[in-house]
Image (cartoon, rainbow, N blue to C red):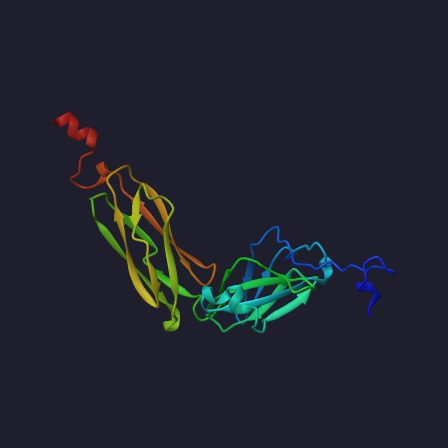
Length: 233
């Protein structure tokens, strides 16, 4: 018989069973993309038994977040893996949108998961777009609208976000536009002033700006300010 199994006879060897997963103090991932791949960066985990340099990190991706549960990924082949690393790299097609996740595993097979992160692979054909007009002068007639056209160059599938820096002067109908399309700027009653509307690509950091100048009410031909109306009443 194996003497290690005999209690009180000879030398007694006791091996502790590791059932605790690695500890991740910060589960968030940061991601950077190029036209053909992406890199996720993370903080290294620790473990109560496995040395930190022996922890294994694995990268997985999927088009649906639900496919990145532990149950779904633990038997899949990772896109990338390594020990003693804080970055892993995966591949993708230009313009592809998907999700990525990293798991960390100790030598006993215990697993911990990092958060899911969105990945948007760059596409040089969809990072260029035009906005017309780029300068607008408008009065403060309520509900007056100006139509703005957005066009992806060479028919590219361009998705954009619209945002106003000062909604006290103008309101912008928030829009997500694919390929080409338009959105509306409305002027509001109030003080005149200047505001800049930003149109930003969803797949790049490129921004186009629209300068909007709103005339003061008394500057409008035939108009009277609120104070003037009060004095003549």
